Image (tube, rainbow, N blue to C red; front, side, top):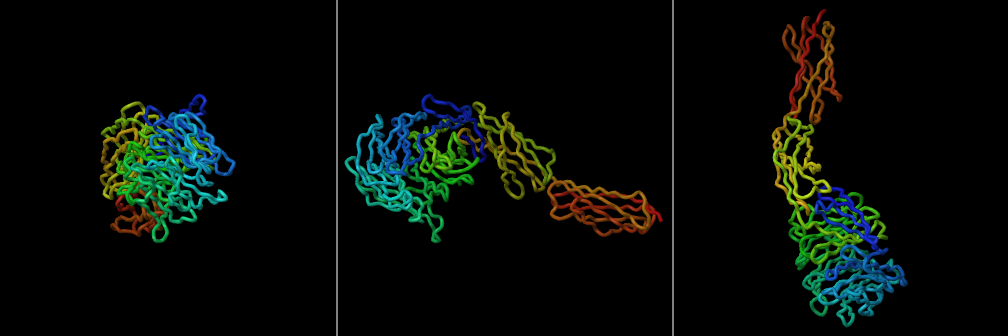
Length: 575
C-alpha cells in the first residue's frame, strides 16, 4: 500500500507485521505523520458479494457469494475492527446480500432459497426464512425496520447480468414481495430517515439505468425520487457501481464508472450545487462511502500503476483540503477497490475497504483509520531566486523553506506554485519539500517584466494549510551575440567574412536576419542583409570599392524577448 497527498503521489513506508493466528499483514503510513493507519487482512474468499459493519460489537462481515454451482457453499468472514479473523461462517449455499438490523442485534444474509438470521454475539443461526429462489446473488439492506433483499432466478449464471430482479422484504414474521422489480443486479443501500436507495447497473436490458430513493417507513417501500441520466442522444447513461447516503441524509453520492463521483440531492436526485473534483486520470469509480460522523467521503476506484485507487477526503465538496490517496499494488494489498467495497464505522473512526486483484479472484480487507489531528505548517518569508538576473526563456529557480509542527513526516510534503505576469496566472505544479524543509520551484519565464511567484501549501488530512509566500522577480530580455571572423588583409577582388549569431532564452520564431553596413573612405552604406543558418552561422561576401581600411558592422535589432547585438571587424584592402 502506498499513500499520497494530491496532486502528486508520495510513496509511504510500509510496516509489515504478522498478528498471531490471523495471517494479517499490516501496512501503515508512518505514525509520525499522523497519516491514515491501514491494516490489511487477506480474505479467505474467492468471490465477493457484500460488506456489513457492526459498530455496536466492533465487527466486520464480508460475504463470499460463490454462485457458480448449486452445490457451492457460502462464506461469511467475521473480523474485529483491528483486522483479526474472529469467525468464519459457512452456509449450505451461496451468500448474496448482507443487512444488519438497526440495533446490530442480528445479521441477515440472503442465501439461495433462504434468508438466514444470525445472532451477532454468538454468530449462531437465530432464524431461517424460506424465500424465493435466487441464483444470481442479490443485494441486501435494512431500512424502516425491515430487511430488504433482491432475488433473481435464471437457469445459467451467465444470464444474471440481464436477469429480472425482484425486491422482497422481511419484517420479522415472514417474507413478502414488494412488486418492485427490474432488469440487472439491482443494488440496495440503506440510509438515514427510513430511506433506501436502489441502483440499476448498466446492462443489455437497461441501456439507460436508473437510481431510485424509497421511503421505507410504511408497510411497503414508496419511491420518492428517481432519475435516469442519458440525454436525448442516449449519451451519459448511468454506469452504476455504488451509492452512499450522507450522514444527514440530504445527499447521495454515486460511483459511476463512466462519469466518476456524482453528488445528488436526496429529495429529487438533482445534481448538487457543488460536486466533487474528477478522479485522477486513469481511475474508474468503483465504490463510494460517507463516514457516519459527516466528516469524510471515501472514493474507491479501479486504477493501475501509481494512479490512486482510493481517495479519502472531506465530505464537504466545498472544502478544498487535499485528500489522502492510496495506491494498492499487488499481492499484499490487491490492485483496486471492489465495487460496493467500502463501509465506515458509525463514528467515522475507521474505513473498511475490500480490494481485489485485476482478475477478481483474490480479496483483501483494509482497515483504515483517518488521522485524528492536523499539524500546523508554515512557509517562511524571504524566497530567493537564481540566477540573480532572470532571463526570458531560460531556467529560473525559486527557493524557500517550509516548517511544520510535530514529528518529521515519513513521506515528503509538497508545495504548489504559480507565476503571475502580464499574461495572467500560470500553474507551475508542485515541488517536493526536502528533509531539511527546503524546496525549489523550477520555472522558465517567457515574458519580459515583473513575474510574481506565489508558493502555497494547501494542507491535507494530516496538515493544516500554510499562509502563502510571494516573491517578485524582474525578468530581462535574453542576450544575443554576434561573432565575426575576417582576414586581416584582402584585395579589391573580394572580402569573405564568416560569423556566428547566438541567442539565449526562447528560440527565435524565424531565423535571424542581420543588417550589414560597410564603412570606407568613401562613406557608409548598407549592404544586402544576411540570413543566419539553422546552426547560427552566416557568411558575407563583398567586393570592396576602395582601398585602405574597410569596416564591416553586422547587427540584429532584437525582439520582444531578446536584446539587440552588434559586431564590427576591419579589413585592410589592397590592390
